[in-house]
Image 1 (cartoon, one colour):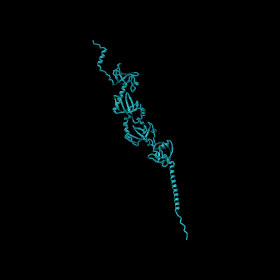
Image 2 (image 1 turned 45 degrees about the horizontal axis):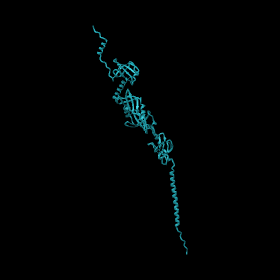
Image 3 (image 1 turned 30 degrees about the vertical axis):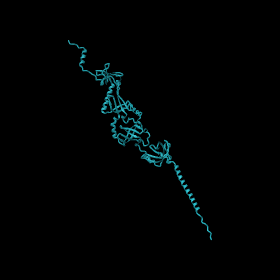
Image 4 (image 1 turned 90 degrees about the horizontal axis):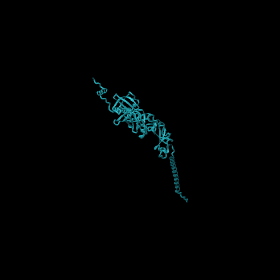
Length: 409
């Protein structure tokens, strides 16, 4: 009579004959099928071999999978523990996303490829990023010209204000330093634009008109970016007339047209004023030496006062031409806003200079008094000479003796 095998014996035999099934070790990625979803918990079937659980902060990844996942979906998770107290494999979506992100960074670094990132915070030194727990940093020095915070005197508070405007803005960068153990990256926007920048620089020629955006306004001029490049419109090249404050000629982000007037390696000099006709060409025809003009004082300096003749034409009354009297401080005699009349005493269109004089229009009592004194002196000398002559003649008369009379015999 054949022996009847029990069910347990059959199961034991099958398990003995079947190969061992092992899950990947902690630290590996594994794929499974979602079998249940709760508020902050997901159960995953791992190919019928085991059941995994994702809960708490481990269910939160950059893709916000917990909000969209449903039963039957395939997901990839990171193994934290082979088995917990409940016999479930402990998984993490957060770590899986971080691993995929890190692999992407490593690949981009090795291939020298650019990636797009979004800053989450700013400090005085640059921009900070947090991508699936991986920390990134873009130093100020590695920002592209359009985003570089050019401010007067490198004011740290102004720099921070400018950088804060870049939080949440997508930036194309390259990884210039990668620390896998520390989970940190150093990124560069300049490096990502370097190739395009060099091509633009090679094509750029002096005399070329270009359109760009104002990227910085400082005391000495206006910075303009175009095609990955940045040039400076020096304060002397903003307008034909005197420029007191460059901020009066544009705002950050404004589009402007400029002329390339200089190129030395990566230093580019630009001009705004040379795109309009030089008003001094017409001024040379209009203003002549000896012409009397009227104008308004618009600037006082230690060496004289400037008079606005037209929008871009100023004339200078040198301190020595203000008055016949000695003037130590032009501000004692003239004030900004004063309306004056002066005579043109010199004009140099090439140097953009008009010399004016107030004292040449004033009477010169001192000189007239001197002439009068000369005349009076001459008259006095004449009278004195006449008197001396009369006295001499009188003396001569007295010395002449009359002849004695003789008696005829």
